[in-house]
Length: 409
Image (cartoon, rainbow, N blue to C red; front, side, top):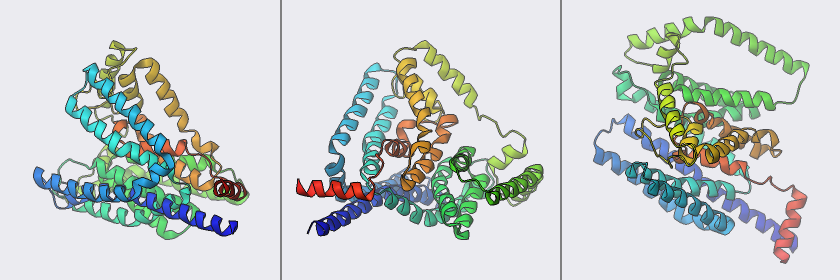
């Protein structure tokens, strides 16, 4: 009888984990489709733009209504505490009077309505393998859709000097999951999707997304503790191929850039590479200097969230500077140190499913440490934090005892 009840309890947990995972991946599907549709059909009318966003919001809200009770059952206290903490942070920032109220409200709405729920959804999932598999499943269609959006983007086809940063980061996460699947299964289809997604970022996207992909490869190399003569030869061969490519990469990119330009397609990333200006800051150094001066002006208590920002598009573009600006050198500094230490979390995770998710999400947030920011509106950051604080799953024997104690209690 006890065994049957354990079996039923395990099935219930898996079913609930699946429902939670569906909401999480639905959010990323909706975000990617929302941006892709607007690019593919060149939506410029503000009303139509708003209608499209509203449709996806309603769909997500309906899924939320059918799944939020599971989160409340598992993490109600955590959910309430996080909502209260973030609400207090934004209220304090409002009364500090240093932020644009409309922009502050926008960031507060995202953090309270999207970031915290996503954190709790991820934290509440017991079997992280279910979440990993769902992310992998949606990565196939998302890569196809976003590449199509890249190609069909009318501004790119007309040759205007623009690029789509938002889509770069949207396709980056599916690329990381495809790369992860290739390392696990060694299946050519995963490598194909990973390469296609990466090439689309190089051609049409931003360098920040490439930082995340290279960061993931570095994590995998550092976490690979198995050494053998065969593996040494594999790495040696790969290094040789990379060396040959690197010695001729300028010619390859120059020919590719010239070919695309002749056909009316402008690639900002290729232009920067062929101009030997890969470290071009796009004005970020001037922004960092400006915001560092603001930090020095109010070193103890900071400016509050969004306080002192020039505008939404001219934010600090660096998560660590953003923390120092918002909370001051003491509190902000502690948050910065903690954020950097969180990057070491993958080296202390033993469960392979939780480890793979943690590596992917750590890599996906690397750009924020260097060239990006807007941390209170980054869903991937909330998910990464949730994974960092997730408890290691119980081994089967411990889990059985836990369930028996729960049932008998």
